Length: 215
Image 1 (cartoon, rainbow, N blue to C red):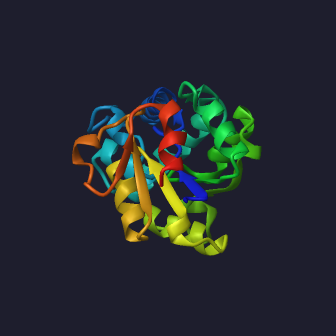
Image 2 (tube, rainbow, N blue to C red; image 1 turned 45 degrees about the vertical axis):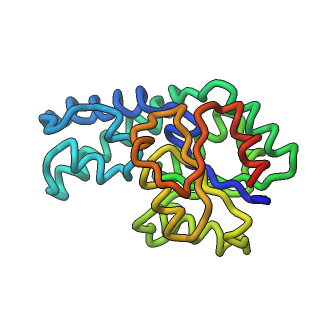
C-alpha cells in the first residue's frame, strides 16, 4: 500500500495556466521585451528562469532577471489568486487525508507563491510538507532531486510512496527515485501519449483514490 502521496501542483491539482500566462505577458510588455515563443501551456511547468529563457529566446542574465522580477511582482501580488482548483480536487484531497494517507507537494513553482496559494485555498491542513526547488538553499536543480529530498527529509520509504503529476518530467523524476508514478490527464495532459508502460494513469479526479487503493 502506498501510504505517502506526493503531488505535483500546476496541471495536477490546480489550473494556474491562465494566471501564469497573463503574468508572463505583463512581464514582457512592461519591460518592452519581444516574445520569441508563443504563450502556450508548454511554458507551464518548468522552473521560472527556464520558461523565461524559452519565451525570450535569450540566456542574457540581465534580461532574464528583469523579466523574472516583473513576473514575480505581478504573480505574487494578484496572479496567484487567480489559480483555479480542478473540479473535485478539494474533495479528493479531503478523502485521501481522511483515509490516513500522508500528502505532500513537490512543485517546480517557487515556494513563496506556492505557500500563498496553499493559504488562499485553505489547503495547508491537507499537506504534511510543501516542497519547491527554491525551498532549499542552495536551490535544487531538478524535480528528481526534490522528490528524493521529500523522501529523505521525512524518513519515508520509496516503496511506500507514489508521485502524482501531469507531465513526462514528473514520471521521469519518479523513475529516477525508483518511485511509483501516476500520470493524470485531467489537467494539461500534454505528455499522455508518451506515458511509459510501467506508469499508472488516471483520467478523472474522482477515480484517483480508487486507483491509489489498489497500489
